[in-house]
Length: 575
Image 1 (cartoon, one colour):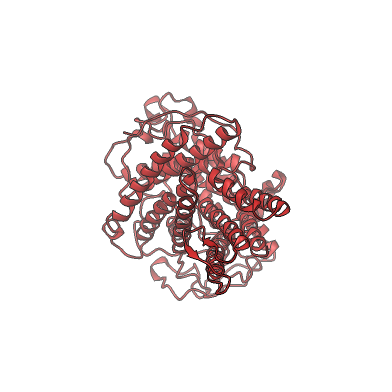
Image 2 (cartoon, helix red, strand yellow):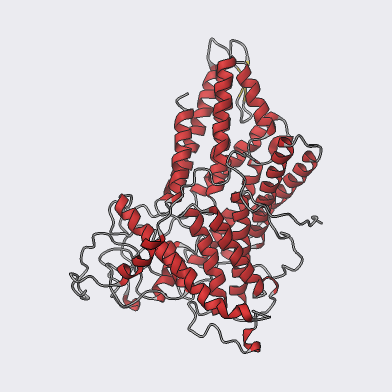
């Protein structure tokens, strides 16, 4: 049985200079390669490796995006108040809008859009009650509706960042700022709504049953018919945690929102609910997605958890097919914790004798989970309606589990030999990139100007979507996995370049990925194989930029990550 242990909170994330994924073996190997190229070259190489190590620090490249509070106070009125020069919209008109953003005309439309744009990557709500679902953003700003509950506002904060299908240039600075302003406004309003709605629970001795103490709360219609109103704040906070990371680049707020969500969930006893009723699926998804959001935030920020990952009181059953995903998230957090503790041991000149055994245990745990992942029953047995939001979400969650299981292999190979470590890193990085590249894109099939939202819901027919607009994926919880893969491939590029520079007539050339070949200056065989190897790595690295670039169409903070990895790739292949 896996041992349980408690860890101590580190309030602030470790500095960016700490590079948990820069392994002992890689440092020694790169140093040896650099020493064969002369002192100056060695110095330059060491400096370049140190720069690359920054790609793996907590929040590396994340752009901090914020705005003055004074501006936020005036935005909501400008969003929903009609302009004096705007004529009333008639049902047969779809006027041009200078800066269209994704605003929706009802809670039902916001929920439908959630199932298209968010649910495939973050299925915290139960499956949709009907299929298909359509996205109906308003063609222009009109008065009459704005979400007032915390969950609708939190979802809107994500949706409004996705470029409107009428916008031909979503990267325009003024259009990016407009979406940023809307997102900030929705997120701030969501927090205000949550705080107001849950305030009465502060006086309850048992917040999971306030009516027993005569406290009246949640007296309104639910946002979702099978999600109790009391769960909406937990879900909203988990969504806002992702918003804080991906849009604002604020890891402290990311962790704060995630911890708020976890604390609220536990106060409602979601971690130990065994009831079987109409709301059982909602409670299970809310608890386990909140748990994974906290774990992911801790891993990304390199922060130690303050709770036992395997607490025996966490007895809420998994939603169908989720057990492997949760265990994969636990593995990635354990590997991040391991890497941090190794780094601390090295800096303190501590006893490293514990490292090999712990590494071997983690490696065995991950290998076992990967085998389970590949032998798991097909998704069609869990969500038989192919193409439905739940089928797509189940398929994506299966891919997420495998991606998360490959990522620790890029953290912990350094107890093996250099060649074995390189091979493990190479295969894990390539598998991660392939799986990420194959993740589905949102498919809002009916988003065209020919399908105005004024049509009755029952009469909506999905015409062909506009072919020119790239639609971003949302809820980018796997960006750190992409960056880790990019870092590993860049380190292998550095090693391959070192082999190229020291390769001589009749020498033995080994690609860092495990390819061994006898070289000869007369036929150039070894040089060619290493050139081809670096070219293959270059193609995979371009996919990393593409992946993060797609996310950054919606989320501003990720633009910094995209730019940093792109610049590192360009610099490496100019050397």
